[in-house]
Structures are given as structure tokens and as C-alpha cells.
Image 1 (cartoon, rainbow, N blue to C red):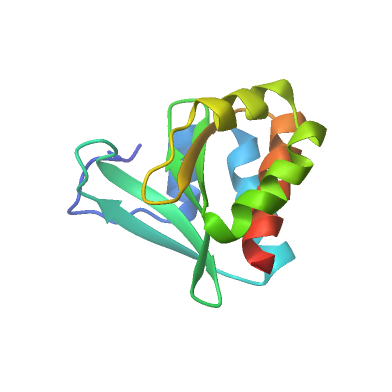
Image 2 (cartoon, rainbow, N blue to C red; image 1 turned 60 degrees about the horizontal axis):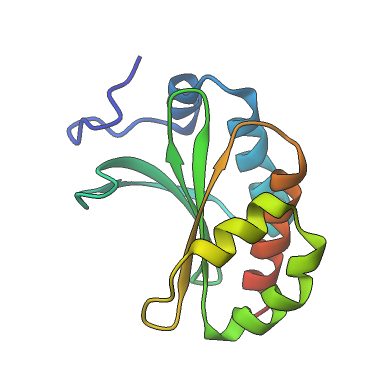
Length: 139
């Protein structure tokens, strides 16, 4: 098992999947790769808030999402900027109460909302995250 905080060893996506030990993680990554024709970038974050390895997906230089591995689940960061905010607020009523609450509770900073969404299954939040990523991709 990898040490997610060990900067000296860059894990593969499969090793991160073993660390998370939740099949939804690799399914989620594969769906992003296929749907948006992009590759993941595994990076080490030295940020005191989220220190450790994470997985980033970008398309045409634009960040789609960042995934933070956890024990049994993972957290997906989707940044909603000024360009995306109106489109997100239009579809928000179609999203789960859980996502609406995350959106409501996330404070604006520099004109952005950094939505941190914990994901452990392929239920409605999974669909909500892809709805947000689709809006990011289009803007």
C-alpha cells in the first residue's frame, strides 16, 4: 500500500485506486478520460490543507476537476468561476439536495467557489459532479 503523503514516490493511478479501495474511483477517472478525451496528471500538493498526492484532469489547459484520495472514498474539487456560476445556478435545482447544500455553504473567494464533494458511490452526486464538469468544459 502506498503512502499518499510520501513525496518521494509518485504513485500510479492504479496504486491510488488501491489506496482508495473503492471501485468507483477508477470508474470515475475512466469516465472523465473517455468522455473528455484527456489524461490524468498525478501531482503532489504541499498545501497544508490538502498535503499529498492528487489526480488532476484538464482539457485544453482548463482544469476540469481535482481528485483527493481518501480511505474508502475520494473528494472531487470542482471550481466554479464567474464564467460558470450563472449556468450552474440555472441547473442547481435539478441537482441533489446534498450538492445544493455544498454549493450554498461554499463561500466565494476571488470570484470562485471551490466545491469539495465527497464521493463513495455511483448515486446522484456522481451525476451532479459530471453536470458541473460539463459546464466547466463548455465555458
